[in-house]
Image 1 (cartoon, rainbow, N blue to C red):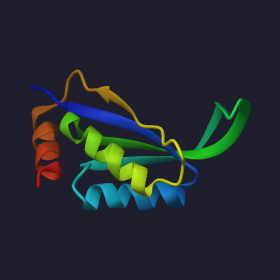
Image 2 (image 1 turned 120 degrees about the vertical axis):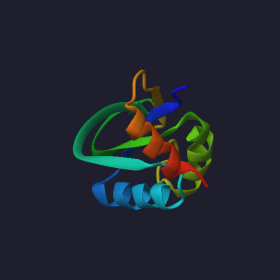
Image 3 (image 1 turned 90 degrees about the vertical axis):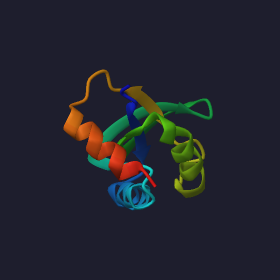
Image 4 (image 1 turned 180 degrees about the horizontal axis):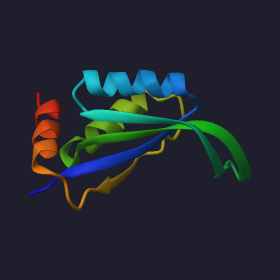
Length: 106
């Protein structure tokens, strides 16, 4: 069974994303986190349309770690409501899947 997921999470800046990414990988909640700086976001917050420059984290992990990451982010992420959107991978190469599983196992 393929339980690989990718979680998208925005951060206020690249420095924050880097700190969170390192924490997730060090805690073995994620195998890998890519950081895309310079993301332009337009969103509704407190009944106003907001615009912001953010950094996007692309978190690679397994579905069993989603709720662990959700709790971890509630403690460490600076946003009141961190974006945590998970997408299940339809196909993953066996060598990558083996590495990912090993990287997030305790």
